[in-house]
Amino acid sequence: MTEFAKHSQLKLLVKLFRYVIPYWSKYLLIILLQFIQGTIHALPIILLSRLPLFIGTGRADDYIKFCMLMLLPAFLFRYVIFESLLNTLNWYIGLKLSLKFRQVLYRHLESLSLSFYQTRPVGEHIYRANVDIDSFIPLFNNPLSGFPMLISSIYQTILMAYLISIAGPEILFYLALILIPIYSLVHVLYSTVRRLDYKKRARAQELTATLRDSIAGIRVIKAFDRVKFTVRRYFRALAQYLKSTQAAYLMQLLVADLVRTSPVHIIWPLSLPFFAYLALKGKIPIISWFGIIIFSRQMLYFLDLTFSFFQKLRLYTVPVQRYFETLDIQPEIIEPGDAKKLADLRGELEFNAVDFAYQPGFPILKNISFKLEPGKKLAIIGASGAGKSTIANLALRLYDPNNGKIKIDQENLRQINMRSVLAQTGVILQDTFLFGGTIRDNIRYANPNATDEEVIQAARDAGIHNDISELPGGYDMDAAEGANLSGGQKQRIAIARALIKKPRLLFLDEATSSLDTVTEDAIIKTLRQNFQKITTIIISHRINLITDADEIIVLDKGEIVERGKHDDLIQNKKLYYQFYRQQIDFET
Image (cartoon, rainbow, N blue to C red):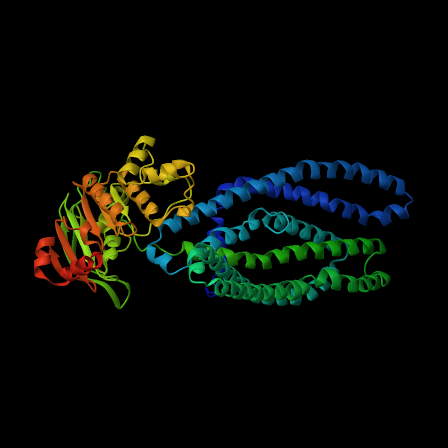
């Protein structure tokens, strides 16, 4: 669970309000409308405070007529015009900011390196991109708890305090003596509430991650008969979330908020005898006494709203803090501003004394050097964990090497605009991922401008066209992340996706591992026909896929232990020969 860390709330709010600046004109209009709303809201209270004066002069009828003439049009305008404008403006700003925050976070998440995703569960990103953002959006547009409410509350608090000062200024001093220690205590209590709220969100994030993993891995769960274990695991996460939620709720609502609202619900009623005592002693006029009762009640009410906002603002900064915790993570892979674009990729690839480790002290690759000429084929073979796929990851600049250099077309990979390279690069991975959408869209993913005819031809070349045609909906069937497709079918769709791109540099990472022998032979033939003049790196356990490679590299524990052509390596009778004999014996 992510630990709570104290951050400057002022700095968080300054960073947050940079996003609000484009809407300053609309907020000015909201402030103006809130002032009008506040004045109209205070109007009945001001008129009510003058009731004893009218009764004392016998002009009650005039008072009623005057009130009706003042209040009817005022409240008509308030609820029909001002309320509609305020709600529309608040809705508009909230919607725009919600979209903006999500766009910024999503764009940033897409820019982060793979190492970031390998150390954090997917559920965390989903929770922060949805729940956390939704939690602080009301700060900007909620008329009951956001800045629109604050503007009105501050204005009406000042207005009521001014009216009290006219009727009996010593009352303000009396109220201040009581409110200062109460609000100081509430401020301290909300520090604990804020910490508990952060813990609650972290638990909720873990619950989301557990649920996501359980659904995504349902096939494995059922296959290993781990349903009961998974249910218990989810219930434990649910219990922890419930416990943290209860702690935050009890501290806020039953302790902090109870103390905060005591001036309105306890202090003010107990102060009425004191106000009466001052009136009877002649300290304040008896007519002003009635106004003070009303004004003080309203002032304490709006002061409570104002103070409540600033305390809950500290809770708003919890999801804000979590939001910027993600935004503050810097990508490990950064391109310079003058990165060179390779518009016409030749496909030359060179590794020069490259070392790499995912974790310090645990090297994956050691002193890897090779040079692949344009149009040639390089095969990489080795036991599981030898570092084969890591070479492809480094060549695609999903990671940067710890030592050494990687070059494409004789340019340092760190100085190249990778978008220009990837636009001309095809990748077929062992673990195929299909996006939500149709099969047609998944094949076209690598080349959005491809025609339907090109999609079908790519599927034919990949040996998957007949299978697709027999599916319900054919090419228009929803792939649903491959739920209705076999592993081999998904892999052939991935091959079609690479074929339709017509790449100049191709990476095949165990591209035929899920295929049967007959289909594999057909796919190998297709790959050799279509990618004959393309620079290709083939990572495979299957010897029959790499026999025609221009050079074969044999990896063992992250080091190159053999290199050469297939026939030469067979004659050497070393590690490559062992792999070859194992496959021959297995097939026979």
